[in-house]
Image 1 (cartoon, rainbow, N blue to C red):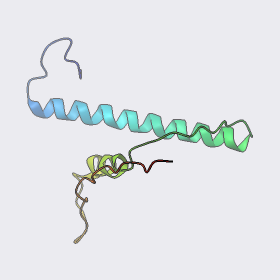
Image 2 (cartoon, rainbow, N blue to C red):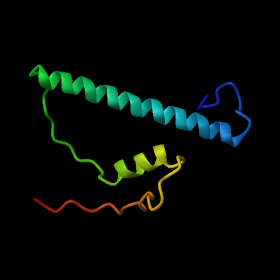
Image 3 (cartoon, rainbow, N blue to C red):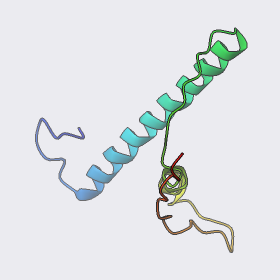
Length: 89
């Protein structure tokens, strides 16, 4: 549906819903993989690998996922953070 292989979805709202469903599925897959990694860790079979990641992506992803829900007074999603360069080793 996201690629509209069988034709357009019609309303742009449907495209937004499909994108939300796809992102939710991807998020769920990440959670499942994290749980499987915890199982490996507890069994002593986890191989740790160093990797770089954009720290600003996580808060944006959370706000995108929960941004449409009502929030208590005074709670808001922060503006996107500017990525910082990693200091040279």
